[in-house]
Amino acid sequence: MRSGNEARSGGAGRSAGEAGTAPTGASAARVRGEAGSDREAGRGREAGTAPTGAARTAPDSVRGSVPDSEAGTAPTGGRPTPPTGDARTAPVGGVGTGGSARRSQVRSLLGRTSGQRPSVNPARAAQRIARRAVTKIVDDSQPSTNPIPIVAVLRGTPYSAPVEAAAKNEDEARRILDLAVDMGAIMMRAGSSTQDVQVSVIAVCTSLGLSTAEVDLTSNSLTVHYMDPEGRMLTVMRVNREESLHFAKLSAVHALVTELVDGKLDYQEARDRLDAIRRQKRPYPEWLVSVAWGALVAGFVNLVGGSWVSSLLGFVITLANMRFGTLLGRTRMPYFFIVVFQAMAITVIAMLANTLHLISTPQFLVASGIVLLLPTMGLVSAVQDALTDFPLTASGRVIQVGLSFTAIVTGIAAGITVGDAVGLRTIEVTLPSTGTQFLTTLVSLFAALLVAAGGAIGMQASKRLLLPTSLIGLAGFVVMVLCLVAGLHGMLTSFLASTVVGLLARPTALRLGAPPSVILIPGIYPILSGLSIFTAAYTIVQPAEGVNLSDGLSALFTAVATNAALAVGGVFGGFLATALPYGKAGRRFMRRRGKSAAEADS
Image (tube, rainbow, N blue to C red; front, side):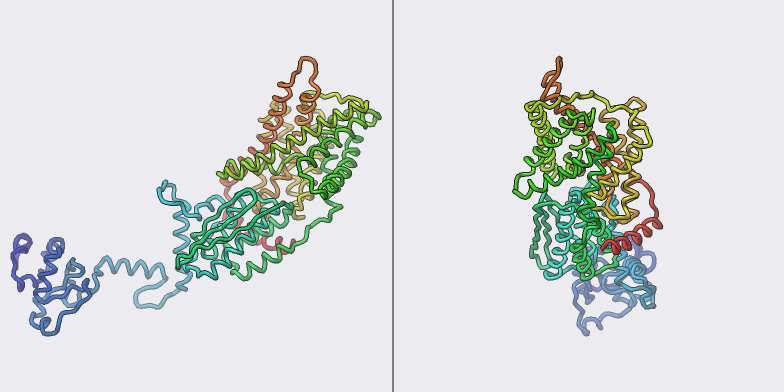
């Protein structure tokens, strides 16, 4: 028998008969790395050994001309495999010890062992493999130059969507896309944020097998694209032409998406649930909603320092002004002019009440009245879209928010001008603080609860969310009071107070089976800064001695920035809340509670 060095040196000049002999023992391992070239494979064919990688078998006459002891093992794909024991028992198809290891790994993933039937359902094993792949994509911290899969968008959200292994045909894909965009359209109309809409649509598509769908959102439209296995592009779009706040629907949709992601619903069950959500009635009648908004204004009057007479008058003015706005809306008048007329009416009524000596602080009444006109939800959504990489929708919302603030200032200025023209008593503006003595009383604490609860009822939130929303709004108000006592003012106070609201709103809402925004928005109402808006508008219209127009514009910018700080703090608090450990038991409780609550709401 030749040594290993002799085998390597003589490999190039061996005859056809010699090339067909495979070394055994220790020399086989050395020959394996040297005899894998195409030329050697050709010589093997000349000697009567057929490479299995070429998918051909040698004729019997040729195969029988070489003794078994000399035939050795046939090269597999140009790379010979060393014999194990008897040379005739070498594996065919190019699978050696590495192939056995791979087969063992596949068996373990599919729940098999050698010589046994599968111990688990192969579909479930494939689903586990898909979940591991999704987790690897979502948790990958390394930047990639390849397009990021849409499932990576679900990182840090309440949804952990698995990807189904089976691709969908055209008909199935279109039905799933219709379901996803219908759900997104309902959320947009009910007042959901852009990020929540995108995450929900992506979670629905991936959980039903459309892992390559792409979602495109603007301020009033939703488009989803998908390419089926045959290469046909499918596109479905919905347009939202107006909003109708309905936070109870948002909670029901959130519970539906959670169950889809968990694999508890199939397509047909999800479609039936969504149709039921579409027909879901509002939890409160219109008269109760009007009373709730009136109670919110009455409580806010007390928070900024008004008397109980001002609170009662604010309640009445709110009911009348809402009716006035409804009548103006029937004329198809643009929303900008409706806000102008409403702000003007509030200002004139406050000046009239001051002239009749019904109240002595009309500025508090005006500040409370314009709270309902402030674009609180639009401001929070604009900031959230800007911070979560939705520049297009953020730009559109910023324009709407800017127009709303402009309409409020214009209405206040017009009201002051009309009041002066008819001889009403001029409003004396108190600058700049509301006074902490009004904010630390027991009545003010009760008023903060009332304001948050009124906002939740006004936005048609679920009944089970009223108490948590009120308590979170109270917590934010207490933080603001503490900041004022500590000597902090302005944007920093607003930011800290709203951060606490966002930090508490997210885990509370998820535990109750609702999106965080349904608690965040009403919870911010007790810490809104309406008095600063009125003060800036009054300074612009009637600048005092030593106070020019530029000072009024600066005050207006500060007031808008202070209210924007509320939105920034709320988003930042929600981000901090994502780091809180909930645990598997907490998530299971949340899902069960959310399902039962959604069924009760519907």
